[in-house]
Amino acid sequence: MTSDQDKGAGQAGARAKESRRDRLKLALRENLKRRKSQARGRDEAAPSEAADGSLDDAGGNGRER
Image (cartoon, rainbow, N blue to C red; front, side, top):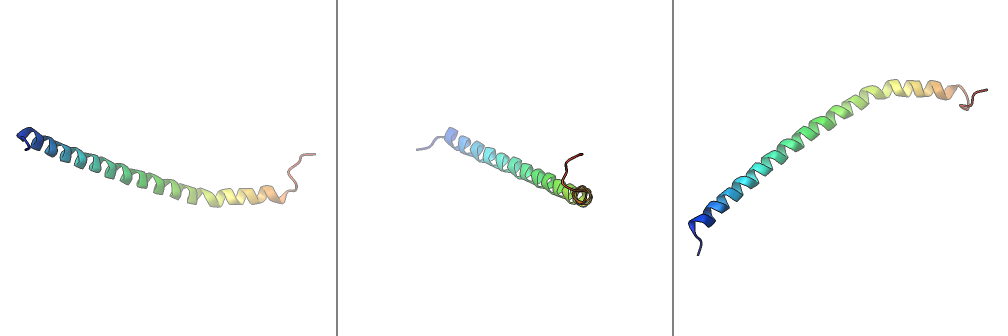
């Protein structure tokens, strides 16, 4: 048989699981936003870096005389 205390513990456990689920959902959403922002930053920086790299490669073998 279950007592009233056991029922209360089950409800508290359910609330704890729901709270954890909400925290994880929020953390995943924030992580996705951060990753998208980083990807946008890389996309914007890539063309200028590629242009700089092509100028460096056109000069020769990279050794100074």
